[in-house]
Structure formats: structure tokens, C-alpha cells
Image 1 (tube, protein in one colour):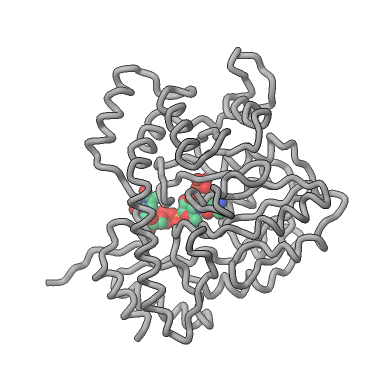
Image 2: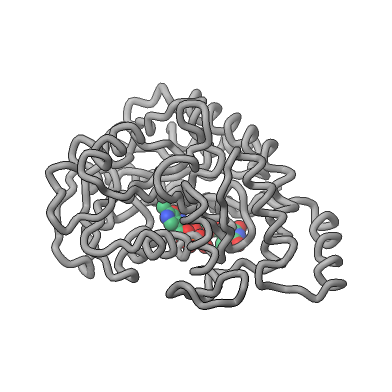
Length: 361
Ligand code: T4K
């Protein structure tokens, strides 16, 4: 019997529909759909409790979370960031009227290389915006030492990193603000959604106002805001999914370790260097020795209806629309050779075996 079901790079992890519809019934009964409703507040509380946070504001998506972070910190001028990321990191910087300055990555961790930041600092630099790529914590100590020395703000793009830790605590506790994504493809999802974790109450209050057109709880206009609100329908899905978070995380870990064990003997493949107790295993990237080999493997997998993804390709510093092109040789080289393999709750061991076999041949 031929199984023709396509295998995509990921599939959302979803709580049983019954549990979600139960929550939706409450929404219908109340008639409150948005504007900081009870489910949004409950999701914020539960996220804080789960990850040991104090100041979390849920918003409509991860891109808005990044823009709100830049706005709340009143950043202007140049922001030093990584070229090995999703375009949203860069578009958020540009939409807030700032200029991204690309700092190359470490070839092992795939995160921004703190040793290369200092030479990029100019009188216009106001912040550093690293990404915890694929949930792998970046060198926070290194980044923060440079930031402290030059009095720069730090925003972490933690879109992939809900559940990752650094030195024993949630990764979201570092920096001035961490911006997270709850997109459908993320470990913890609300379909679309995200949030900002602030380091103090003042920033938290400011972010809440920015999310709601600039109004505070007394309906006084106190900030230049916009609409970053999360709806009750999305928060409800988040509450249902959050109950399964630990199960999803341990399943991912198990699958990543399995892939790694089975693929590690292949001479033409290497892996992102991660600390197993700190990453959240949200993606499984493999790095090939050449782009030619990556293309050949991808073609072979696609022919069997298996669709891994080239996250992140191309390196965003090479996009022609980004003015002031600055080379980032490591990011440009890795981008051409990296492929994220299918990884999600419903992925079966037999399907993984098939993927491993096709790559290994
Ligand atoms: N910073 C970083 C570092 C990011 O990676 C991202 C987003 C952001 C910031 C911004 O966060 P958000 O504003 O998005 O919250 C995805 C996501 O749209 C995006 O959230 C994510 N990063 C980026 C890395 O990937 P695509 O282009 O992969 O989506 P798509 O539609 O091709 O989906 C991939 C696979 O997932 C499909 O083949 C099938 C499956 N899928 C997808 C969706 C949306 C489903 O089964 N169901 C679904 O509903 O972008």
C-alpha cells in the first residue's frame, strides 16, 4: 500500500479539540472577544508561572512583539543584529525607523558572535538584537558584557526560544526585553501570537499601553501606541496548548536526539552546537558540506513528498533591498548549506527512519 501523505517541516501541536471548544464556549457566553480579556490575562499569568517570569505582555504576533520592544526602549539609529535569521527580525528594526547592522555569527552555535560586535559599534548604535536561533541560547554573557561597556540596550529575538534556559533560568529573563512568537509553527502556539517579556514594571506598563493604542488602564493616552492586541480566541488556544507543553517538549527532545544519533556517522553532515539542557529542540537543522549536496538531498526527499525547509536562506544581509550590504561570510556560507528536517508531535518513528535512510544513501 502506498502512503502518499506529505511530510512537512512541521505541523502545529494542538490540544484535543474538545478542550479548546470548551474554552470557546466561555468566550461565546461572555461575548468578550478582545481588549485584554480574561483569557489573555490568564494566558499571561500561566506563562509567567510556567517560565518563572514577572512581566509578560501577550501580543498578536512575534513581529509586532519585536517592534513594540524597539518602540518601548525608544531606540533610534543603528541596531546590531544577526544576518542568520528570519526576515521579521530585520523588518521590525526597519519599520521602527532604525538601521540594522549585521554582525556575523559563530559557525558552531549559529548565533551572533559577541567577539565581532564591538568593531561595529558607532556613535549611532543604540542596541544589540541577537536571536536565539532555533531555540539555542546565544552567548548572553558575551553580548551583555559588550552592551554594558557601551551602554547599549539588549532585545533578544526569542521567537524560537520559549522553554529554553540559560544558566538554570528561563532564557526570557535576560536582556531589556525578549520578544517571543506563538506562531502555528512554534513549539507553543496560539495560531498567531507572541509576546514581550520585560525586565521591569516600568517597561511592562509601557508595553501594555503601546499594545492598546497608547492608552493606559484609566483610558488616558500616555504613549505613542498601536494595535498589538491578542484576541480571546487565540489566547484560549494558547491555554489549551500550554497544558501539553511539557509533553511536546520532551517528544521533540527525543526526536532530535534520535535524528542526531542516526545521522552523526555521516561525514558530510554537521550539527548546530547546543547545550542539551538549555535548548528547547524546536527545530532540527543539519548543515551539509556543500550547497550542491543539500540541493541533491532535498530533491530526493521532495520526490518522496517530504518537505524539509531551508531556514534561513538566504542570509538576510544579502537581500538586495537591505541597503549598506555588509558581508557576513559565515552566515552566508551556512545559509546555503542548512536544512531543517521535519520535526513535530505527530511525526512517526517510521517516517523519521525513512528520512534518515534517504539522507544517508
Ligand atoms: N523572529 C524570528 C527569528 C522568527 O523565526 C520569526 C518567525 C519571527 C521573528 C516573527 O514571528 P511571527 O511574527 O511569525 O510570530 C514560518 C512562520 O510564519 C514564522 O513565524 C517563523 N518565524 C518562520 C521561521 O517560519 P513558514 O514560511 O515556514 O510557514 P509555512 O506556511 O511554510 O509553514 C511551514 C510548514 O508548517 C508547512 O509546510 C506546513 C506547516 N503548517 C504551517 C502553518 C502556518 C501547518 O501545518 N499549519 C499551519 O497553520 O513561516
